[in-house]
Image (cartoon, rainbow, N blue to C red; front, side, top):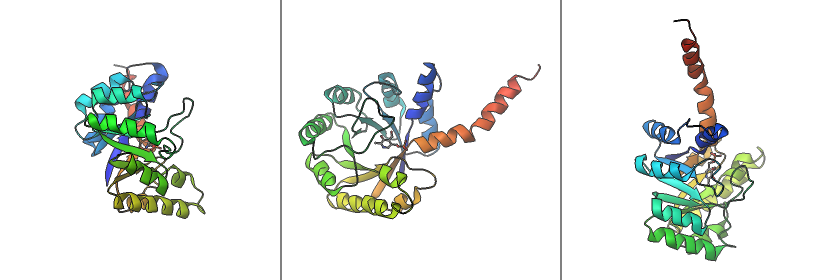
Length: 237
Ligand code: PXP
């Protein structure tokens, strides 16, 4: 199972102060050094965290796989065609959402999504579509020419204990159907150190994109060292 680390939150911390640090490029390289097989960033329409400058630099330094999540707009497909990440993941985007809400409705937006897929493939970019675990969305994703899907695990992650088996089953059925149609199967959203194992045990899923939980843990496991280093600097010389 490959791990793609979503480093958007590193840019969110930087933008909290409009400062230079923390640098997303440094985070990407550290994640790669630690064994991540991919780096994911979401270039949002409002550029609230990741900027074009970041994706330009990441394109130059990421040696594994650079995956850019974006809306299926002409602005975004033009940027991706210029920067040429290894993969684009098409996602729905609402201006005021805290994070991506649900998968892209490919069934309802077939024409616009097909147009974006065509442009991206012509630029040599692999296209994945972030969809809910729904068989009609799987078929529509294949129909518009995507090479991969990322199954939204948000429903599974947020489910109550009683509801979780059914949510996991939906993810597994969508994964099996997508693989049988020749699509590469990725998954992500809301995965944590606690809930990831049943998803890992789904044989058709080859890659997970995980962000919040990894960056949240990094803030805590790194805090002690960061404080110690500042305490040392405050010692009398
Ligand atoms: N996949 C997609 C399409 C996303 O939009 C996100 C969140 O940016 C993720 C995966 C990662 O989700 P999380 O940050 O909850 O791990």
